[in-house]
Amino acid sequence: MKVILTTNIKKLGKIGEVVSVRDGYARNFLFPNKMALRNNKKNLSYYEKIAEDMKRNEEIKLNDAKDLIDKIKKN
Image 1 (cartoon, rainbow, N blue to C red):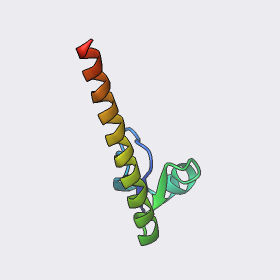
Image 2 (tube, rainbow, N blue to C red):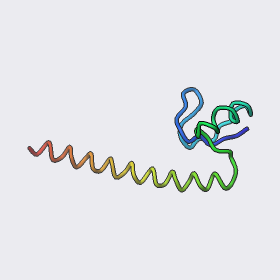
Image 3 (tube, helix red, strand yellow):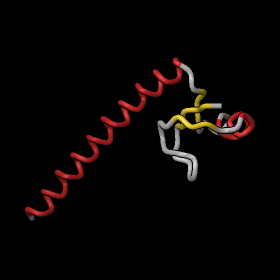
């Protein structure tokens, strides 16, 4: 079964990757723990929207951190 990972899982993949796992592992562990979504058009488009938001938030955090570093260096 192909799934879209919503969290980083060691030895399996990172957030947003489409990986192939056994059906039982997906049904019994990944889906109940909200660690993955089924690989279909609806979930793929949903995850792309979330990924864009996450990327924007990371860029904002990075810029804030760089500004803070610059302020500290000036003092």
